[in-house]
Image 1: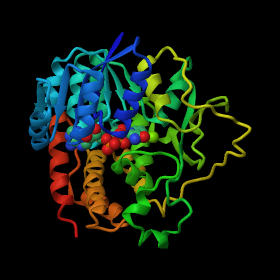
Image 2: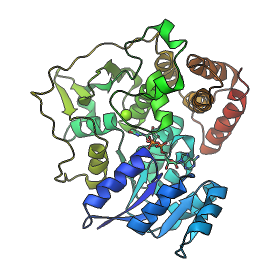
Image 3: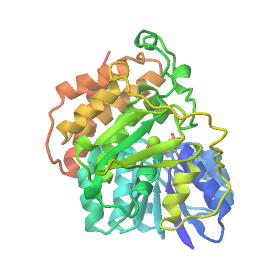
Amino acid sequence: MKKIFILGSTGSIGVNTLNVIRDYPDLFRVSGITANSNIDLLMEQVEEFKPEWVVISDKSAAKNFALRSSDKIEILEGEEGLITATKNADYDILLSALVGFAGLSPTIEGIKRRKRIALANKETLVVAGEFIMDLAKKYFSEIIPVDSEHSAIFQCLAGEKTSEVGKLILTASGGPFLENTFEDLKSVSVADALNHPNWDMGNKISIDSASMMNKGLEVIEAHWLFNLPKNQIDVVIHPQSIIHSMVEFVDGSIKAQLSKPDMKLPIIYALSYPNRLQNNYTQTDLCKISKLTFFEPDFRKFECLKIAFDVMQIGGTAPCIMNAANEIAVEMFLNEKIKFLDIPKVISESLDKIEKVSHPDIETIFECDRKTRELALTYN
Ligand code: NAD
Ligand code: MG
């Protein structure tokens, strides 16, 4: 029986993880769950899964939860609550699925406890990849990707030598604006941007997919996770989202992992690895998929993807600056304070103005995130 602590149980990945756990009551048990403010859903989850640890980050939501909860269940609050719980709860796997920079601190606690990290929160590796991979090595903590592209690559690399990898090929659906022109992007609405063709995800990652910043974050995530040089990571547009990513080896052979899109697959793999569990989540009938197509991304239209590649080359705190500015820009776009094409502008401005530090320690990363947010909020 594996005990799972889920950071962000009320989110898209969190709910899918609970859907998986529900199907394997003899294999998995929920040790802890956390939410920011969706206490209605959290209450249902507490009732069904009876976790020992519950954290609500938003303090007024935590008070409301306590007032409404009939059980005498102890609730921890705020960021401190996340740290206390991940430090002390009894779990085998930390499923890290908060959104954004907020996922970094509790993930560090899981690593320090030598636990397996099932990592959905890609921002952790984007902002602190070097620090996190060193820490995981030091504490013998396994980081198993949940992001579908990285799960695909992880599966393709099974039994292979990193030295024989030619390149990683991350696939991208191209998001809701694949068919639009650059001109069209000037006036797209929040609803247009949230309307992803293949995946149902949280708001932040949906906007990141529309701007292709999501693929940019994933390129940096892959660089750290698989310890490969930056020039060995490519992106190819594959609108059907059937091939989740590929690895090309030095002999020219390419391995790919395929399935109809369903996040329960990479989630269950991260929980059951190195084993595979039987399920009927998705049947991929290749004869019904009439074609698989591939083409190069348009870096002019999707400037965020270009920025991410540039920032990966610069290294140090540059990805942290990009990430913080992007988080603020996405929030401003969702609140209709800026236009869609302002998102890369907020990021470029922050990258121009904030000082970059190479090989940052963790304090420097927190400080860089804080400063960048402060600056990005002044964009107009
Ligand atoms: P989501 O917005 O649906 O859920 C986020 C979860 O984190 C919720 O439980 C929310 O309550 C909690 N949360 C949000 N802000 C918080 C904060 N400041 N402090 C504490 N808790 C907070 O997001 P999601 O789509 O599930 O994505 C989660 C992570 O997984 C992201 O990093 C995303 O990039 C990554 N990811 C998601 C998918 C997907 O299909 N949804 C796929 C691959 C990777
Ligand atoms: Mg992904």
